[in-house]
Image (cartoon, rainbow, N blue to C red):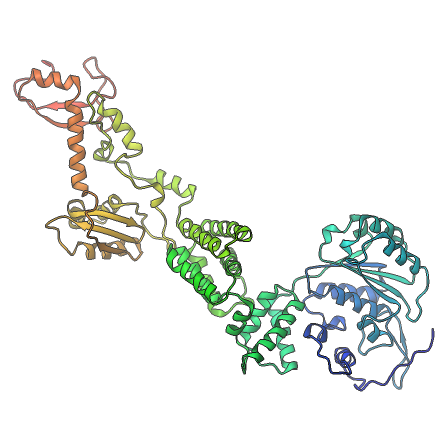
Length: 620
């Protein structure tokens, strides 16, 4: 091996490899080095968040079980190329003998100081460590050159190392040409592959390599790393700002350091003594997390106006509508996860207030509501990508979430129908026909299943979005039944006689009062509903006429039934036969079944009673 000239380092021998690498990498003309390069790990001890891989490689080197090819995969910025360079240093680590220290010439991951080849490998200029970008060298000719040169021994180092970045971009023929050499390489050759798309690497290549999946960096680990960099750079930055950077980088160390670089320049540009989260939101175009949570709360309450107002406010402040929905999706995921796993720890990217509010939502909302909101939101985010107006697409996504938040699931509807109380005789006769010859009983049977007079859709009987109420109300009839259940007869009579419904929603009621009604009915009703349901109800008196009162509707139905009964041919004959007779009631077979006898009317006909002292049914 030729003798190397090693210049004296201005750093002491006790300096760490990281410090010596930064010092040696500093440009002589004072050119600024970005933080992502300045603080690139130089040893395995400097790697963060990849402990399983570091432990495996450390044990492999200690046992002498060093593989011929390594495949490093993971998302951007988690250390794939950096790990490859550290491995190249470990393959060729060498130190000459010095006073008080023996010579080191063995592959090892313990590199307390820079070796003979370390700095050249760190700077990507070592002759025996060849870095190739597969994105620009995709053909079989490029791989043929690698294969030809692999036969020759290294010039200076102990091992010749080929680092191929973005290896998945090699052509199919290039991969096939590499297979034989990759399976049986010369003893002095090591291959290190890095890729972000492992599925595009042929299985024949993957089976010949030792694979390591580098993980995304956890937010708390990333925040601690950024805090250390800021301390070294003498940068004053808030913890919330670091959490925002960690969240925006999505687990990528390089992205986080690049954003930190940008934040430092942004803070200096506007003259800030300390970089705050508010200034970073302006720089990144992201929404205020607390306002996103406010928007989520408004959506779950069905307050679409407030939710749209929050979105427009964030948009006017420079937030990207898509990023606002991304933040909303992240919060929905957190609430769902917390509901299923209540002991979920709080990560560093989430404030204590956000964690507390998320836990409250998890206790109040159902899984069905959360999953439905997630599905609508993800569909809305897809629509935003194709829409020429993203803010309009975001508005429509929020509208769908708000209207579906309190919609009962099919299972809830079936349970309500199964647990619904039986209809009263008066309700069962709602649909009696007023036509000339139709039998009232047929109309009665249909009305029992679906009252024709009730225009309310089934979905209006919906659950409270923020609390589990003790009663589910779908209209004024349900409120009257609730008053009867709670034995408030005075309020029940007032509701039937004096209240005309104008508009009904869960938690909100708008009514009109009949002439002569007590004006305190609205206040009393609001207080009673809150006591009975556990929800806050707003009862307002409207100037509109409103629907007829329950008593007026019942009287109209009775008149309609009587008219239908008078129209029956049998009844007309009976009334003609018995002058002065009067129909006092119309009873349905379901309410009072008549015994089946020869004199009984056919099934489905009503049992009509007459008042006449001179005649009885036998004579009829």
